[in-house]
Amino acid sequence: MAITTASAAAPSLYYLSFLTRRNTTPSFSFLFPKPTKPFSLSHSFHSLSLTPQAKASDIDIPFFDDLNPEEDVVFDPPPPPEGFIPPPYFDDGPEETEDEIAAAYEELYGPAYSGVSVLGNDIYVMDSKVKKTSAFGKVKKEKVRDGFEERVVQVRRVTKVVKGGKNLQFRVIVVVGDKQGQVGVGVGKAKEVIAAVQKSALNARRNIVTIPMTKYLTFPHRSEGDYGAAKVMLRPAAPGTGVIAGGAVRIVLEMAGVENALGKQLRSKNALNNARATVVAVQKMKHFRQVAQERGIPMEELWK
Image (cartoon, rainbow, N blue to C red; front, side):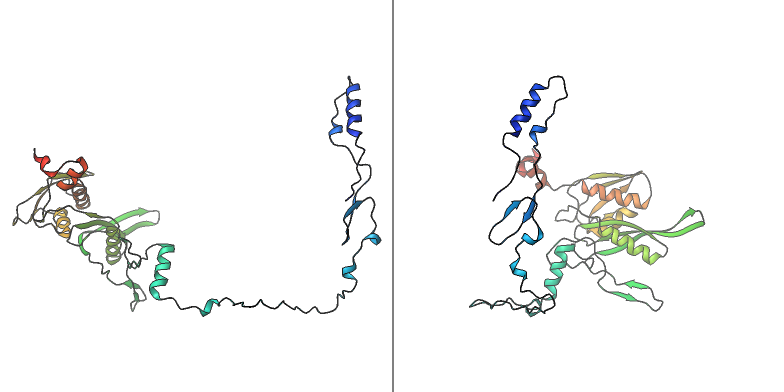
């Protein structure tokens, strides 16, 4: 390969001329010497060189001499090697089962709203599997069968004043529980009572809490809970006492499975605030073995 450039002594000459010019502006042209002649590229199968002013007739292209552009080129692939096994097609594989497809969807998008977990996830938000259309064209949902029972605490008609008039809706408070220590309180609004009940039940399933209970189905100790202006007092009771409480507190304790307890609403009589204050009070409770484990001492040391 031959490259024609400026003289090798050019940088030194530029540098000497720069030293002699004391009263002029410094020039750094010696760092970038200019080529004396333009370059052109000439291809050849035998050699590659840069020559000045290459002409089109000097370019050697023997490969294109025997090529006819109007002739149809036939693709002739090489034969496969010996022992080559073609890969199977996508449709030739075994069909996936419904459980495998559901597991793949759950891994990508999370648990489905149907409440069926293939991978064993803990789901609180559950919806109906099948949607049916009634005679009036409305979509009605089947009742969710997940082991939770629903109890309506309160239904109120609420009004919102908007620019065009009044917007009437129904507000429903629902308590759900499995009567085995899990309970949730939810609230929902809709223009129809049935739709409001479904919304509040779904909201209650999103707020499930676990109540610590002893073998006598009562609380391990006393507790108090505040929510807004409401205050609730909870006390354990002896076996056979029953649930002595009123209003929303009684419904929350019964849906949780508590059979022996004392409850009292101390301040506000608001049903929603009292239900949520009851949930706050039971969340403060702990088993004795849990307290001993947190302190790192045996349970016998708690009563000394």
